[in-house]
Image (cartoon, rainbow, N blue to C red; front, top):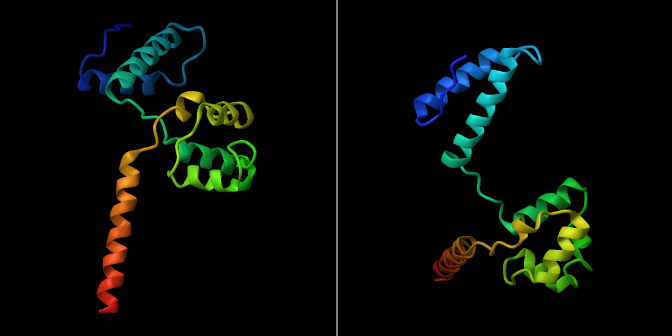
Length: 142
């Protein structure tokens, strides 16, 4: 059992191959200990080199509703009235601290996901799409 730090992509690939070979080893064996250490090293390497971004807060809310078999009406009372829910889901209004607390407490959405600002890229893309649609309508009416 020769374990060394994972510093390069080649080291990472070699560690993955070794984990695959050790996958069905018996619990408590030296091979199992090697597998455990390699898994920890691989996890640290992946955290540094392949970070996973947190989901957009709006997408996280929609996903949780879908998981629970609910629709956006379930947000009335958690976020506010129907118009407030609509504004939040359309990205026209940001979540307040009280809304974040309610969503976390009542739907179990992690607060660190909800605290993120709503993506400005999404808003800009939406505006660009609206402009293109308007220009097409103008061309068609001419």
